[in-house]
Length: 108
Image 1 (cartoon, helix red, strand yellow):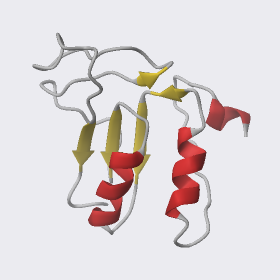
Image 2 (tube, rainbow, N blue to C red; image 1 turned 180 degrees about the vertical axis):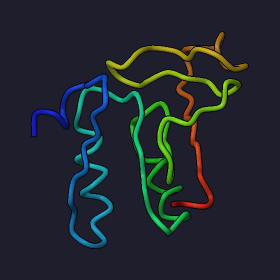
Image 3 (cartoon, rainbow, N blue to C red; image 1 turned 135 degrees about the vertical axis):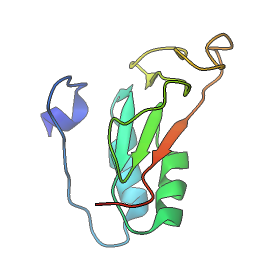
């Protein structure tokens, strides 16, 4: 799917189906794109979401929320979505890959 492989900016969200329990397949699909700015996970299983967030090639992973950020959290992408991080204390050592995870503990 073309839109899932491009880095679209705007009011666009790609929602894709997967077979029950096929977490590795979902990760493979998510990580085959050449971009990695942000990713979102919506689930009731927080431990599974944390496992997936560690495996995603994205600079920010949102769990049960999207685009709600803390101004003190580092921001930046992986791969072709940028190099290094802006904001936060981790701005200067930008050669290290840092992951930011935002969790909404009370999903709507």
